[in-house]
Image (tube, rainbow, N blue to C red):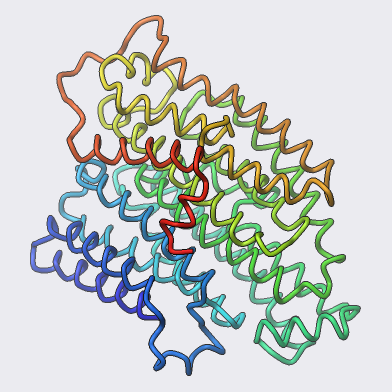
Length: 459
């Protein structure tokens, strides 16, 4: 809980820096606070906070996923000086809202009670409704905010109805007491209905089909740095919460929901990859790519073992790093070209080779090409599920092969254009190049030496 308090205080300080017209320092305040929080996450939790462990416990898994989310948010903050050039007067609010949302994510990592889960989801989501519509002069941004809010409210209704049914049948909000009830009386119809309603609500938060319909429009309409935040940090929090609630509270009735997840994985991989191929806009394609990765992640529910949490963390870290790598390139192109079509990337490899190589390595990692972190992440998840769900693994492999086609469209545009469209003297900043090099090195190093992931995060 110490990490949660540090992030919250940092968000408050960053917010008030804007009140005193020092918004340009909010980014540095945020980075400093996040670095301190990252350091504290390695320390043992203070005994004072043990009294809250029935509601929130900062255990090993919570600490691991918190570290991953903090690292990704620090990288995003480094990109903020360029990405938020159109929000000079409101930068402090944007950085503060992202950190408030991170507070919700941390709660979702450590929840021990489904009421705490609900609070975490709302703390995570409410700042996102504002962030999605922060580009006030863009109708698509306004549409993204409204659509996300309305669909989020709809999903919250499912979640609360499910919580009510689970509590009404089991008589408890505690994950482990619900787990015991599920084992003892798992044939209770209301209990099963509650679990399925909660599954649907969390499938919405992770954008798993058929509850994905909001994500392409919201991701495309939101400011690109906010899109990167939703595709990485928010995805990490949402999927881990989904994984935790289903594999702890509802293991006693796994047979009643696992097949539903299997069908959703098939629908997700088919729809996302086919729709990704049909896109002419790179940002919208990446939105469908994000949906497809939820399908791959869904295989973690099959063949559960002691390494499942670690495999999930590895995959999410590799995916999030790659997402930042692609999105930072897209942000640069969008600022210069005012668009994100594939043609906007023509010739980027000749004018900004570091940025183009970063995007290419990130896209290859997303596709699961060997020697990248994405390959090792997919291999671990697929290997876990191959015995219990070979058909789903086959579908996932075919989906990965299909995804290469739309990832290559950006790579081809950057390095093999018919005509370069970059005729600007503006160069990438030093900060951008440092972040780009870090991402490339990390994706390749972890892909070749996967044990580095465990060492760097204190496992």
